[in-house]
Length: 396
Image (cartoon, rainbow, N blue to C red; front, top):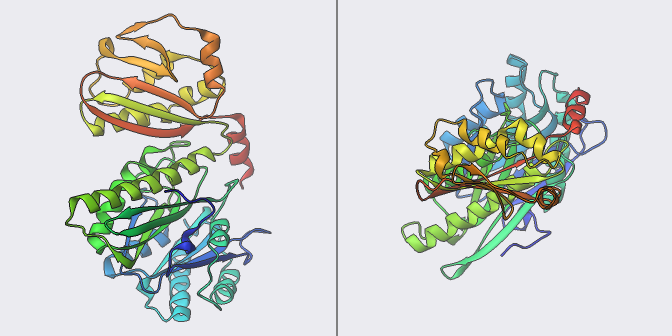
């Protein structure tokens, strides 16, 4: 069940809030998440070679034990600053740990925003002292606001399901609308569940969920230096990881939350007017299906055609054929909505105005029937508009 207007702090034992500390001129820019009794924490991070010091720190923290808190600033990525950037991250973790009575490696750090500009650390330092004066705040909405950069809205998802005899909850918040083309993670995302899941199993579950959600979404084919997704388990209710039915039910619930979060990011893509959903059916393998779906949603020509309400199926064929996958054009069919444009390797007559009407709607659903296997995959993207250029030239 998806319960609207709930946040990460609706999970018992999860605390969070957000404030304005001075990194941005007038909006919230500092958040924390605190899970004092967390039994496990999993994380995925950017694979970009230019990596933020916060990601370096968080990777080490994750290997050293259970992360119990995160301190997050927006408006400045604290990246490309050499030793000062690394020192800033370390000091943010240490200060947070001291105020919460934790070890430094029990605190994750995230910084998101402009790259290469010095972090106003005095503002951060003062903000951490202020926001953690009462560390057990239940203000998930405030935290969700404080992690945003060019986003136009907060992005939160809450779902629950009966697994075994218990109601298992998973809630998450995320941010992002540009520099979105994930490689293990995308933007920033934070999840919590009231389940009792060992750390390795939680990591496996998060990896699987990210692969079919965040890693199947794209705004502009760019992968951030700071991408991080963390997931905490509070341990309130046991999920039997050896029971196939219970474990698959938990994985399904986590997948659903992550897919909804990823779709919220893409729907808020910089300058976007439409969500694009691309489904590949009948592929030889899931890996190949995913590669084709991502190729289609990544294509600037496809994205601009969708923006212009142009049923240019040639662009769709081009994008599907780009990756190194098996694809037989003579068996391929392409649909926009319920309308077939190309079938079994040949163009078909279609009602141009009817498809234009479909393209004007949101979302736009595109389906490829490969007819050479049984694997399927879905990816999510958005159209590309003039506003994307305006936002990214004004950002500095």
